Structures are given as structure tokens and as C-alpha cells.
Image 1 (cartoon, rainbow, N blue to C red):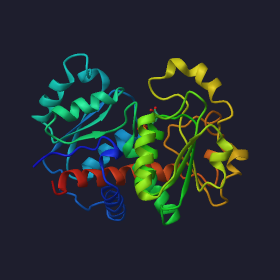
Image 2: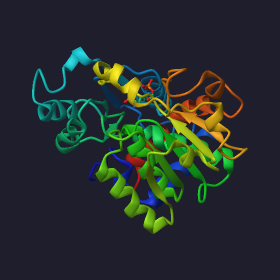
Image 3: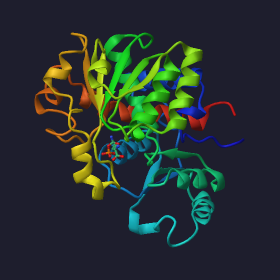
Image 4: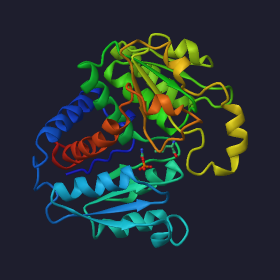
Amino acid sequence: MKKRDFLSIADHSSQDITAILKLATQLKKKPSLHAGLLKGKSIALIFQKPSNRTRVSFETGIFQLGGNTIYLAPDDISLGKREPTADIARTLSRYVGGIVARVFAHGDLLELSKYATVPVINALSDLSHPCQALADILTVQEKFGQLKGIKMAYIGDGNNMTNSLMLACAKVGMDMVVAVPKGHEPAMDYVKKAQACAQVTGAKIIVTHDPVKAADGANVLYTDTWVSMGQEEETAKRLKDFKGYQIDAKLAAKADKGHIFMHCLPAHRGQEVSADVIDGAHSVIFDEAENRLHVQKAVMVFLYSSKK
Ligand code: CP
Ligand code: NVA
């Protein structure tokens, strides 16, 4: 049986994404479903960066599926420094049933995937965060009862979240307007991939520099930090560059009356979002956080039990 990975939403068909979302809904209703899936398996969690949601939801989800986890902090295996990443992948494959990895360079995930004989799951890289994007889509589906025709406005930094959200929206037929300052656009190959996929599903993926245009009539307002992990040295410049891109009450008033506000967290009140918006009645941030657990369990059911 050939192992399967979950590295990017681009690697999976719209049908597979829909199947994962359906599974996640079932697992949310009945957390004990597939309880024996990972029985006897250890899953290695390689984390080069800090984490609250990703680590805790993976550890909890793997436990609920009958497996156990081995958390490897940045200094434990020193990915790419102490020994070649290919050797880490081949060694870990002799012990564990899977690898969940949060890395700086997306290429490290590709290297792990190439050499590991067990499934590799992307727990965030500089280029993407597919588990978060799927949890977000599940949240949108729960709130609106549908995905097609829903408009998401992403306002802020064109980063790993933006890349994965564009692909996810395109795959499920949601429209997405991304508003970023000049010089902070999402990765062009992700824009192209998402737009190509959108042509098939009927979605629209647009990149603009105008936050008001993006927010206009939107069903979903989404933002993320202006300073992603690994960019700390650029903080002063970034805070300047993103002036005018905060989602505050004035901008939120442009959105549809029934809109929801989303943020993958961790958030910075007073920077990418005002406190009244993120803590206000439209905010669904903790539903998104909870859905990480259900979606990631669904991803593991998909990887470990689907037909190869
Ligand atoms: N959203 C998210 O991935 O959070 P953590 O960095 O806390 O895992
Ligand atoms: N863009 C953020 C997402 C955190 C979950 C980062 O990479 O730090």
C-alpha cells in the first residue's frame, strides 16, 4: 500500500476535501468514531516553532484515535542541522506510524515526505497551513449551511494562511477576495493554482490592495497576524506597511450584516484586528480552534484508511 501525505490542499481533489469535511462533521458528533484507527502506532510531532492549537489538537486527536505521540521540540532533533532531513525521515519511519511536522522551510516537508515511508502531515510551513484552512472551511459550512457562493474577505498579510485559504476556497467553490498592501501579496504560484481550480468549481479568487472592496458584502471577514513566526526581525517595518489594513468596526460595517469574523490565532488585538471586532458578536474564533481537532482526526482517518 502506498502511503499518502497531507502537505497541501492542492494535492487533494475537491471530492476528497468534501469527504474529509463530511468525516470531520461525523467525528465532531461522535468523537469515539474510528477510535482504534491508530492503535499500536506512535506519531512523531516535529515542531520547529511554538504552538498551542496545533500541538494540543493533534496530541488529543491522535489519543482519541488510539495512538500515542512523541513530541520533538526544536532542539530535540534539530531538523536539517544535526543530520540530513532525509535520514531523519528514514529513521523515524522505522519507529513511528506517521510524522506531523511544523517547519520553517516548506521544502523540509517535501524532503520528509520524499524519504518517509509513513504519512507526513503539514502542521504549518512558511508557505501553507492546510489543517487550519480546512478547519476554517468546516466552520464556514457550519455557520452558513453551505459553501458555494459564500464570499470570504481576507485582509492583511498574504502569508501561509492566505495561500492555504485560497486553495481551500477554490476547491469548495467559495469566493475569496484577498486585500494586502503592495509587497505583501500571497505566493503567485498559489494564486495561479487556486485560480485554475476556481475555474472548475465556479469560485472567484481575486487579489487586490483595497480592503474596503474586499470587505464589501462579505460573508466572512478573515485576518491573520502581520508578523508570522520567523519574521520577528521585520516587525517595525511590517507594522508600518500594514497601516490601514486592520479589521476594525468601520471596515466590518462594510461586510454583510450576517457576516462572521475569523482568525486562525494567535491574534494581536490593536494590530490586524481591533478588540471590539475579535471579541464581538460576529467572531467565531474559538469554533475554528475547536474544529482543528475534528478536521485533523478526519485527515488521519482519510490517510490511514482510504483506498490507495
Ligand atoms: N492556528 C494555529 O496553528 O495555532 P498554533 O500556532 O497555536 O498552533
Ligand atoms: N501566519 C502565522 C500563522 C500562525 C498559526 C504564522 O505563520 O506565524
